[in-house]
Image 1 (tube, rainbow, N blue to C red):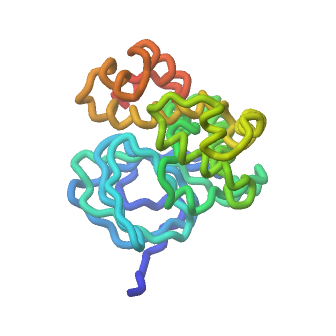
Image 2 (cartoon, rainbow, N blue to C red):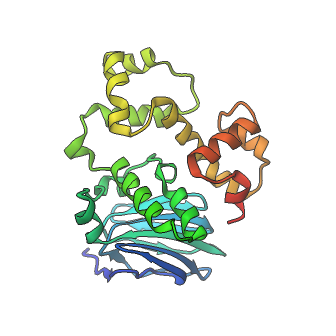
Image 3 (cartoon, rainbow, N blue to C red):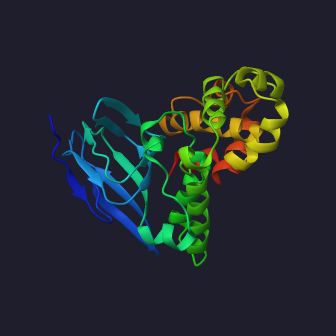
Length: 267
């Protein structure tokens, strides 16, 4: 069965926009959605990243479906059709849309469709939440800050098939699947049949951070939905996500996202 999808052009989303800002070829928006809304099948003409602040929906794509809730970081590759159904009460989503001029200006590649269709990519902690912070701060320096952060976000997720060796995707899977297990460089190398020096020398080049920093990002990603839900204390979240204590969790969370956990909770 062929899908007839609606094209959403620049700045267009399913929900109602309550705030929109333009920073050259970068558009940031906040959208809200009525409870129970279901969209048409649609696709976006420009790539964009989204962060679900509250609520969520069930997203359907050809051949798959996934429930997406508060704290999720998402990417939408231009031209891929999808449908969102049964929006939850109070759904609110932050979006960053990148126009073609952005990629022309900085000579960057559009992140591939695998980022949209794959799992376990730390999108939030690659700069998305720092961009969210700048969107709300909105002072005279936010434009240059957001441009730099968007460039970093895009570079963090450059098309792997063109730039990265095969082992980078394998190591990503291991680090995400074994996020809560003690892991040494030697163990990781043995698991991937690589020399430890290869990982040590090239990991930062391909992931733009150290192994330790990447593992911290994964832990913070897992904490984000818990913070937004508000059912657990920060201490309980810290222990659930593998941090030594609440203080360690708070320091790491702020370092990676630019926000304190309590600030993020009340956005």
